[in-house]
Amino acid sequence: MTNAANEPPYPNPKYAWYVVTLLLLSYIVSWLDRQILSYLIGPIKSSFELSDTQIGLLLGPAFAVFYITLGIPLGWLADRKSRRSMIGWGIALWSVMTAISAFAKNFGQLFLARIGVGVGEATLTPAALSLINDYFPREKRGRAVSLYMSGISLGTAIGSILGGWIVAQVMKTPEVTLPVFGVMEGWRATFLIVGLPGLILALLMLTVKEPYRRDRIALDGTASAQPSLLDALKYYWAHRGAFGCLWFGQTGMTVIGYGQFFNAELFRRTWGWGMAEIGLALGIMFLIFGPTGANFGGWLADRFTKQGDKGGPMRAVLIANAILIPFSIIFPLMPTPWLALAMLALSTLGGAMASACGATATTVLAPNQVRAQAVAVYWVIINFAGLFLGPPLVGLITDRVFGDEAALKYALAAVPALMAVPVFVLLTRGLKNYRAEMAAPERHN
Image (cartoon, rainbow, N blue to C red; front, top):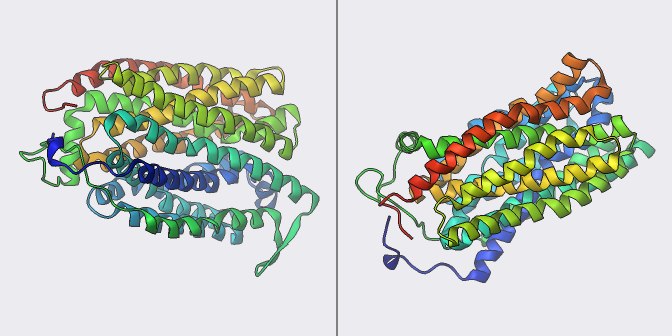
């Protein structure tokens, strides 16, 4: 690793936290645009006469097609070019494509619009986490990364509250009138209202400065060399005991999390709640337990690191999954909606911890030259599993195994139950490997 004495000082902490806040707002908006569809399932199913399986495809694979396939090349680009510019253009693209969803005339067109949202959002996290790690010293990165990762929960919370309220209004007045766009169905207006404000954030990214790139180690004879994508992949493969166990162990988190895009429907079908009631309840729950879990996870990872545990972030990942998985199995099977909400709160706490700590563990483990690419490969693996298995698997189990919409609760419980054993085997083994990697001679504080 390069000598810290030869590097410029870290940026002003106030400015660094401003950048993290701006990236957090971008992540919130990205999750809002991604998740709002789950609150429009009823109106869209009615308009296009879709099945739960087709809805699962819109929630998962449609978004994932390019969100996943572009992740690695965009990570490679982020390790070389302006991360700020990549993020700004990405925000503009996904915002426009969310708005364009309002004009879809059938399932195929909506599928294509969701692909466009995925293309834009693929630019964000690899570049954002690379930026954050260059703004903060190692012992403070867990909290900074965790604040950014809390955008998942905050975006979900805002999407729940806003989406539930809008759908409730749609049921009262099927058509709304918007300036410029005129009269349109309520679910279509929702996409416009949610999508267009993101363009403001795209402009604000112009205020972000590119920081000095730190934490380089000799991958091929010199720490200053810029490795190719193939070099990066060879490095991850050579250190697969740590990278592989972490990345594949974290797929359970995303399969469970994306499968829970059906949560609003669970409360409607199982307990007869209205969408406004569901959105408010889930939104408040996500607002409290999501950021709490993410920031607690970051604090825990930093605490373990300060105590001298080389595997601090990975240890926090294992603890987080030990909270996430059991409560994800339990919550849909509760006899009352309030008990279900309480168990879902604990599931959300664990999931937010796992998401934040997994990102921290990846960025700490990866050298600077291949850090954004490492995040991209990690994102490809966990999101491929989550988006292609999560919502479609829940929909398929409901449609094909039980053949009854009312059995959605059993499908939601089955998915995390299937994930439990492989997740804990991989993460337990990965903790040992991670500690060994971080104790290697070429790494030092």
